[in-house]
Image (tube, rainbow, N blue to C red):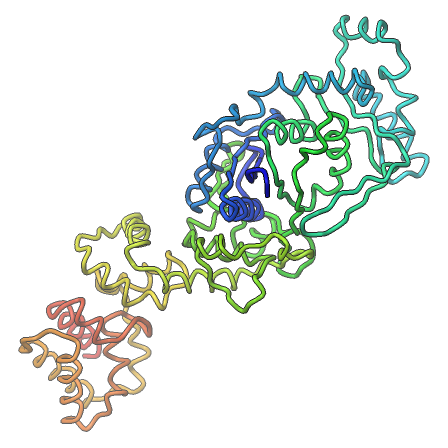
Length: 509
């Protein structure tokens, strides 16, 4: 590649960041880093009616959590500032006016009522697509039949207007998609999109072309829902004289509902009980909290990993990838054409694998904060780390650690004695009484010494150790779960172990 690779993620600050958006970021990031290029964050905030305060900062926080930090953007600066479209308003108007001057666009003065009347007329004629295009513009209120002088007089009178691209019918527009190969469109099916709105702000169609050109973007990866806009964008690149600088495009497949029936939405997550946003998002208008992967206990490494393989593979059976491995192995050409079904159980599997794979120190603080938020202060970090190491194989989410290990720090509130009673007898009662005495006298409070003592007393009572392990476990943790029982005893210490056994024995008296 002769030019330096430059890619961009250009979200609108209108709400939470969907996992499909993060996957788009990831593919951009991997491609840029693989080719020693730049990853740009550009905020597309030209639709001020949908702008939500705090959404831009939220997007930046999500990217930071994922470890996908932009090389340029509104928060880090760069050679192509500003990176918010609302601050680039003058750029767009200049190019929109140039398109009008060159005959590729026109002023449209239609009122909302006139537009609605046109659509109603099309409906009455049985048309399914309601377009302002070559077939309707001749009967609408625009500058095409007017002289420059007449047009100027209308504008000078303060009449609101938009600028629309002029699409010529009967043309075939094609381009090479990096995923889909040759894609073709017939302009008979393309309407005269608005380029500049009445408030002077550009629409996405104009802004994305102008910004990609001015910021020297070489490759543009976006969702397949933008495919219908491609002919308009290609024509703008052509009409503005920049066609040789147009980025190479790749339209990414959708992330589908678990049943494969349509695009995964926030409502699907609510309905099926899993997140679709990267991080918690609170809607400032409704106060509704929408949970994210981060707060539900996902590691960023796992989140990135599961998104990478949601519609891509490297041709092998490998599933677990570090970010560096993804940078090395990623290929946009191996992204699948079809949509990928989201599988939350598989997502949790990735997280479980990453919990086991990473050193405890890399996620210890997150888990510790969760304990603190639930009212449990951790004072001994060495003990805490030892506990996390013992239970991590049993945890799918970081939030699982509390339930799986709280008994190491506080005695269980409830003891599942109902699971012990059916096979309880006097011999077992005497065994545990003697075990308490032996534990009180033991000098080396270590796993092997505890286990040996336990087995010796069991043999003396002619009991099988297997019959006694479950009662001891329930005495120490309250239920049928947890790591090795002697690991538990060795960590909680002699005094606490003896105390919990005595307490449970008291329940049988």
